[in-house]
Image (tube, rainbow, N blue to C red; front, side, top):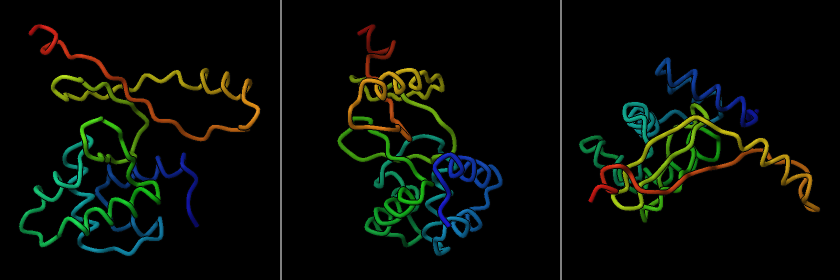
Length: 154
C-alpha cells in the first residue's frame, strides 16, 4: 500500500540513514534491482541535486545505461523516494526526498545551497482562503534565485 507523502519522507530518511535501499524499495512496492540500488547509493553519497548524466558518469563500469537511469528516476519519483528540483540549469535534477528543504541557486555560476527555513504554510493558508477552486495544498516546491557572493564581487 503506498504511503502518504509525509510518511514517505520519513521512510526515505530512515532507510537512507540505515543505507538499506533494498528494504526501502520493497516497502514502496518496487522490484529490487542492482541498477536501482546503485542509483540510490550514488544519491546518498552526494547529498545534492543531480541529473541523469551526473549519475551515469558516477556509475561508469556498473553497466547501467542512461535510459535505465531516466526510467529509474521516473519510478523513484512516482513512489516518493526522489524529488524533482528545478535549478534552471537546462536539465532535470533530482534529489532524495529524505527531508524537507529548499534551494538558493546562483543565476551566474549555478552554485546551489540548501536551506531548511520554510514559512510556506502561512502563504498556503492565505491562498486557500482566497481560492474558489482549491480545498487543500498537499506539497510545495520553493527555489530561490540570485547571485552568490563570489559572483557579485566580479
